Amino acid sequence: MNKLNKNILMLLTLCFVFAEKLPNDIRWVVESKEYQMLCHQVYDTAEEKLRNIIATNGSHENQAIIMDLDETVLDNSHYQIELHEKNETFNMQSWAAWVEREEAKLVPGAYEYILLLRSYHIDIIFISNRMDERLEATKNNMRKLNIFSDDDIYLLRKNKQDKKD
Image (tube, rainbow, N blue to C red; front, side, top):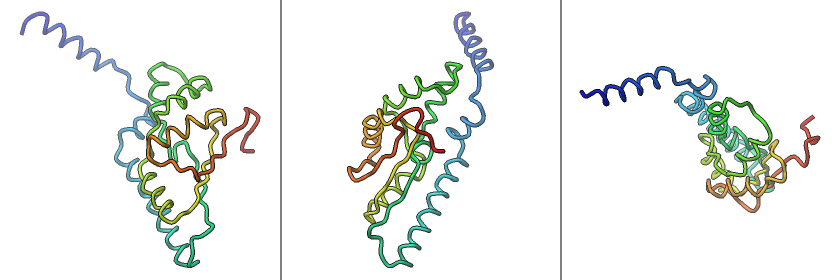
């Protein structure tokens, strides 16, 4: 092995050794099979309960489901990775930029559950702490994920004082 290759190999080894790992919470969401299985289990349980309610009531007309958007439907773990890489914490400026990029993925199981709701013509009401001024970016992200419907209702924050309490 020539000297250049040895130096490159040593540099890569050092980079690997000193590379900072993701915090456990982020790593668990993006890398663990357990997280994926738990998400699917939650949605499978929701599907079972929905089917039982419909069977008991004999109808699914005029029904609605309320779903939180972030980390229930939309997976924003890549935003968390970016914060970690920049050595930053959550802030509204970076969060707004992330939402505007329309790059959130789906939480495992969310797609199938939403398709089930749509097959029963059940209305979906999405709630979020996202600001209402980013509604179009949120809808565009949903379109990219093939889960958007014009019939959906979005309840987002009107301003910073608009809180859950």
